[in-house]
Amino acid sequence: MTNLQKTSSSKGDLLYLIRGKDKERDAWHYVLIDRLKLPIFKKDTEKGDIDILRYGKIIRSGWGKNPPDDVMSEIKSAYS
Image (cartoon, rainbow, N blue to C red):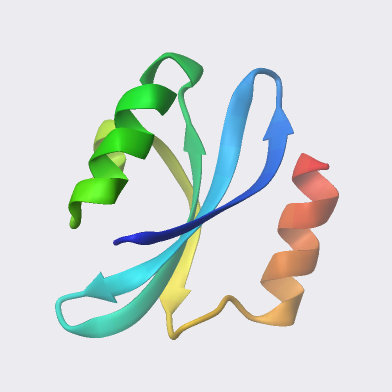
């Protein structure tokens, strides 16, 4: 996964929407990044593919380029 977008912050952890390829298929993941791991996460994403589980917790994920509208609304409500 290489395309990331900060979406919100909550309780000191940061929520990112990460888009990329997973086994050659388009995929997206909402990931809560541990604050202490954030600098490493940002640096590693510039290098290319990463194992997002090393940096935090996956909140939601799915196939396709973008999350469905209902998922985006749910995440916004829960983490804004």
